[in-house]
Every structure is written in structure tokens, then in C-alpha cells.
Amino acid sequence: MTDTAAGAVNRKNTATAEQMDFKTKEGIWKVLVIACGLLMIILPLAIGAFLIYRGGATFTKYGHSVLKFLFSSNWNPADDMNGGGHVGAAVYIVGSLVTCGLALLISVPFSMAAAIFMTEIAPKTGNKILRPAVEIFVGIPSVVYGWIGLTILVPFIRKIFNLNQGFSVLAAGIVLAVMIFPSITTLSADAIRSVPISARKAAYGLGATRWQVISGIVVPAAQPGILTGIILGLARAFGEALAVAMVIGKTRSLPKSILSPTTNLTSAIASDMGGAMEGGEYNAALWSMALLLFIISLLFIFLVHFVAMKGAERNKK
Amino acid sequence: MRVNDNTIRADEDLYEMQADRIDKSLEKDADHTDDSTASRVSEKFSVKDLNLHYGTFHALKDVSIDIDTNAITALIGPSGCGKSTFLKTLNRMNDFEEGIKIEGSVQLDGQEIYDRAMNPIELRQRVGMVFQQPNPFPKTIYDNVAYGPRIRGIHKKSELDEIVEKALTEVGIWDEMKDRLKKSALGLSGGQQQRLCIARTLAVSPEVILMDEPTSALDPISTMKIEDLAMELKKKYTIVIVTHNMQQANRISDKTAFFLLGELIEYGKTSDIFLNPKNKKTEEYITGRFG
Image (tube, rainbow over all chains, first blue to last red):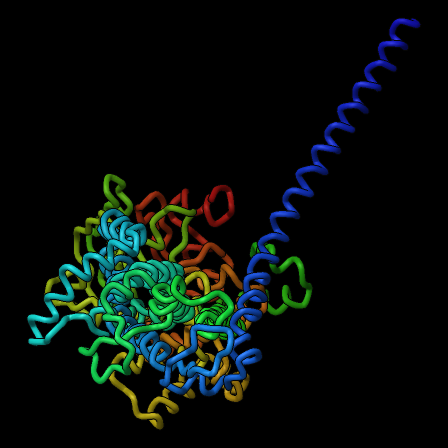
């Protein structure tokens, strides 16, 4: 009798000990997960703050106007702490805009066609062959794209258009187009795939042809997802440095046509950051360009959310 | 008269209304019997020895049936009996299924549906379809109805306006919809959506409307409205309806076909099928002994 009572007490003790152990374990994991979550929030905020601090120096410490930075093409910052140079980054900004715009113009039609083909026209081949093929595209490092562009595309453009050199907006646009093609394609294909079968059946039931179903029902219904893909592709193109730097020609002048060489924000930062004196005007101007890239990518993210929200709203009302 | 619809039990008034309607439809059927030789009735579809295989599965076995013009034909039977499959052979919506093989003859106004000469796109314009789940396009109410006419090349606004108003009036929701035509159709209630889907089908002026359990996803009141609508529409259109609800078949159809395991067991006037079924299986099914 006393034996069993003692046994019961014993058991109870071990149970509470296990429970304690369980609680501390639970607590440790909780702290760890919260810390990771907070880091995810703090890190981009810290990067943003740092960019504002360093990039803002151009406008505060060296007293240049934001408008001049954005719209003047007079770029001659002093590489010292005294300042007094010119920081018009318009050439870089235009270079980025033009190459990305061209990349979109080339990539969007191809991506849309590929997305429609692999979902609507040949879903079997699409899933088995095209999807993995497109995913391989994503895995290719940008330096490889750039190098191939440099050895094949640049000489090809020079030959075809009979130019002195093939480095050009066109070369950069094509390389970027190939790079963003997979993101736009996969996101568009996912969006198209998520259009309910019932909507397609309804349209076929009304005597629509396959093309009418695709253009009139499927693509409009998938539009928010497709737009998201395009914006994310654009964001990737905007941030790409290496591959573009290798084929754009890095010539600091506004491009006269898509065949002329120019330069852009990312290649300027990548190539000049090592040479500029820490804390000098040149250095600050480069940081301002980085800040500009940061703001633009933020804008893209907001745009993605805005489009998604609009899409959800449209389907609700 | 057996009334065992779950939905009716819930609401006393509704019970009365529906019972009343059942009586009326029976009376009407009785009237029909008197002038059954009237030449008005001719067949829209003529199906002979139809066999359909999904891969190795024999889904329809030697089905022969004539479907009357300007009448409602109900297809009943337990799940998997082939009634929906049969319905889809009538406008070739089966074309989208894989591994399907069809033998036999299906004629629409004497024209072979599975002939090379028949364009399935054209066929589906003549034989419209309403689905089990209301499936409006994620577009505005107006664009939903105008979709059919538009893909047929009608783009003039005045013409489209007229078609939309006419179709929505026909299904009885014009007054509710006329001030919200530019709002998304997805915001409508299930019953409104289903009537919108019927309006969308009517907008291309079909000859036949196939309905695949059009009320199974709807509440009793909406169901009643769709049933009334079907009875109204049969004046202009031929209607074939698949239903799990035997009371529904009894209430609205002129003829009923009972399918079991891919075979057409019995086909005849609805009043005959429900009051004196010839086949024992039919009787067992409609009295709820299986299914």
C-alpha cells in the first residue's frame, strides 16, 4: 500500500519534471523563431536607413538638388570631401529605363505565348518538358548570360547592323529579356492555370473557339497574376548588374538609338564603387544611385501588392 | 403522392406552394395525354444505339431515345448511371474528355452530331448548356451576357444592349440587374448567378438548353424560381435536364428517362413513369428504395 503510494508520488514528480523540460524547450524555440522574424523585418529597414544616410549625403552634405540628380546628365562628381562637382545621373537612369523597357517589349510576348502554350495548348508537354526547361533558365548565373551575350550577341549585332562595335542598348535589352523570360513565364502560367475550369467550360458551352476562350476568358481572368509576373521580371531586370555591364558598352552618353552603347545605374555602381574615395562626393553620388534603385524596387513591390489587391477586389464586387 | 424532399420539410409555406405546383403539373400532364397525338410534338434529338466508352469503362450502353421539341425531358438515375455523360454527348462537351470513344447515331434535327461535317462550335451555339455549379465569368453582369453574342461578332452597343436586356428579362432578373450591370457577376447570390448563366445561354439564341443538375447547389426558393423559369422557357426552347431530385423531375418535365449503370431502363411520359412505372427498377428508384 505504502509502496504504491510512493510509486504514484514518484511518477508525479517525473511527470512535472518532463513538463518543465517541455516548457523550457517550447520557450527556447519560441524566442528563436521570433528573433528570426524580427531579423527579417529589421534587416531591410536597416539597409534602407543606411542607404538614406549614405545616399542622402549628396543632397545634404554636398548640397545638390534632387531634381539635378535625376534630370541633369552632367556627371562629374569630385572624388574628395570638398565636393563642388556635378552629379547629374540622368544618363544612368535613362540607360536603366531604356534597357529594361526594351527587355520587357521583347520578353512579354514570348513569355505570354510560352505560358499559354504550356497551360492551354499542350499541358502535357508543358508540364513534362517546358516547365523544367524554363526552370533551368532561372538557375543559370547572370555572369554566364553576360558572357554568352558578350561572345555571341555583341559580335552578331556588330555584324548585322554594320557597326563599329556591338555593345548597345539592344544587346543589353536582349540579354535582360532572356533573363526575365522564365519569371514572367512561370508566374503567368501559374495564374492561367488557376483560372477555374468551370469558366472555360462555360465559354466552350457557348460555342467559343479555343482561341476565344484563351483571349476572352482565361487571359483576362489571369491578368493580375500576369501583371505580377511582369512587374517582378521588371524588378529583376532593373537590379541586374553583371550581365548588363558586360554588354552595354559602359559609355556615359545618352543613347541615340537602340544600337548605341550607354550605361546604367547598376553597372556604374559596380564598376566605380571601388575607385571612389570613402565619404567623398563621388562615393556619396554612387550611394544616391543605390538609394534610387532601392526606392524603385520598393515601388515595384508596392505595385505588385496594388495589382493583387485590385484583382481580389474586382473578383469580389 | 409522395413528397419527401428534404428541402420542403423545412418550410411549411414552401411545402404548400410546391405541392400546389406538383398538382398543377400533373393536371397539365393529364391534359397532354388527351391530345398526345398532336403534331406539335416532334423530336429534336434522335439517338440510336449510342455506346460510349471512357477508356475501358463502358459508360453508355445501347442508348436509344428521341427527345421532344419544346418540351422538358428529365434524365434521372443514381450517381454514375451515365445521365450527365449522355447529356454531354448532345452538344459534344465530351470532346474535352480524354480516351473517349463514341459509337452509334446522335441526330439533331436529322443531322448527325458526330459527323465530320458537323462543326462542334456551331453545334454548341445551337445546343446551350447550364452547369451544376453556377459558373459566371469573372466579368461584369453585362459582359457575361454579352460574351456569347460578342464571340459571334456582334459588337454594336445598341444591339448588345438589346440582347442583354432581353435575355435578363427572359430569366426574370432584369429589374434587379439593370442598375448594376457594370458590377462583377461574382457578387451575385447563387440563385441569381444561375439565372445569369441561363441568360448567358439564351443570349446566343440556342434551340436546345441542356441543364446539368442546375439547382443542386441552390436553396429551395432559388430552385423554385429556376423550375418556374424552365417551364416558361420550354415554350421557345427544347430543354433536357439532369436531376437528382425526383420531385423536380415530376414537377417540371414532360418526359422522363431513367438511367441505370449506363443503360436507359425506362423512358416515357413523366406521369406514366411516376404513377405506373413499367420496370421494377424504375419503381424501386423513384420510391427511394435505392439510389
